[in-house]
Image 1 (cartoon, rainbow, N blue to C red):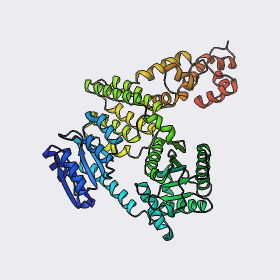
Image 2: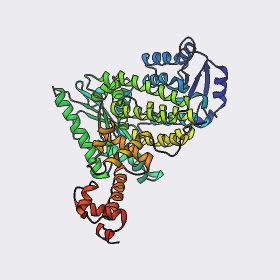
Image 3: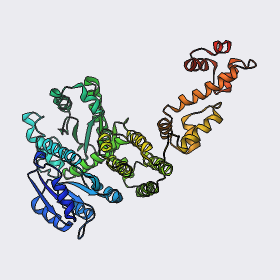
Amino acid sequence: MKVLIVDDEPLVRIGIKSAINWEEQGILAVEEAEDGEEALHKIMTDRPDVVLLDIKMPKLDGIEVLRELKQRNIATKVIVLSSFDDISYVKEALRLGAYDYCHKPDINERELSAILGSIGKQSAASDQSNIIVPKGATLKDQSLHNALHGNSSHLADTSLRQGNLYVVLFAVKDYETVIKRYTEHTESVLGNTIKNMISELFSKEKELEYLQLDEQRGVIFISNSNLKSLLASLTRVNSVLQMVNSTLKRFVNIELVFGISDWFTDFDGIQNGYQQAQTALSFKFYHPESHFFYYQHIRRKQQNKSAVEQSDQSVSQMKGALREGSGDKFLQLLGRWEQLLEKEECLTEQETKKIYEGFYFMMAESGKDSEEQAEALHTFAELSTYYRQLFQRLLPGKTNEYSQLVRSIIQYISEHYHESLSLKQLGEQFHLSPNYLSRMFKQDVGKGMFEYINEVRIEKAKELLKDYQYKIYDVAEMVGFSNQAHFAIVFQKYTGVPPKQFRKE
């Protein structure tokens, strides 16, 4: 591989160049450029595999370079170098196709090596994608692979036909758990199992093709040349994917998650369809329980500029709160921002991680440990919980006291424990989604909300049981239980004895 380092500060270029053992990463040549114009010229002439690109530079800045690369369809991996103050630029860079982002003040050998290693593995997998397909399918596999990257000239040799085409990218659901069933020497069995089963299913179908990308990902190509309506085409797509998922679930206990492109009319649309499928699949970040993600639904979220602007404004306010040293204000703003993301789903997983990491960089000397652990988290709920716990420990002036939100919830429960309480009702009371409310309460208090509510109710019941003017069923109703039997079960769970025995003692 060849690398180009682009930064207008000579000391930064020297620092990066000397920070890593390039030969160990399989890097044969490391070149430099001091501005965007020089960088674009060297990219066009030398075609480096990886570009380390500063955001703010004279002549052409990093964003303009990325736009040029995208317009010219130049496939090089770009790692953006920037500070957290440039987070809006970083988001734009990621949208324009940047591979990853490094926090410039804290760039280090481990972080760069990890990113370069990931790129190296992807390149190797891409170059050797025909290893896991039968010898007879190698040429067809190469044709499909080329079509994903813009060259669809040889698809006439496949079963696909022009008209009502879809590209579907899938990934193994809960891959980290699934792969534990296999030893290091039998990991390839997973990819081969998926490939063999799908190939067998498709051998009996027309206008279906399949390409294995790696052990956990594959692409399904579907054409519907004989179907006249889009509804009929989409119905067939759904039927094919349901068949694939149910078969793998039934025989090998593997479930898949699918990203489904919009329809397109000819083979030239496959590359764009693949990009759409990638975008669609990325939204499993917000819905880890779902299996099917359609680009036609997700496109509306991507085009919601108002939500993205609100997110940018919130991030700016949170940075201001940190600079002021106001931990409570930061957490309050963080909660509003997380609610916005849960509702609007306006940022990608990569964008969201980078914002969390940026806040961590502002609080700690180095964020490399948090970033490494966060890489294993793949849902918004996991990411939110992980970073909130970090922030609670690091924020200036923070104690182990509950947040204002949780204190308000506790106060409300103490006043309304005798009523019928539900997460939905509490969410409406505090203008929060039930899932978010439940998660924030558990993070602060260390126990589930209804576990806490039951504890409050049982403590109140213990006081009331000392007064013999109340029957046990009266006490049950007075503390919020709809029937005596349920009350007795919960009471014994928390006290070890039934209400009647407690009263006698």
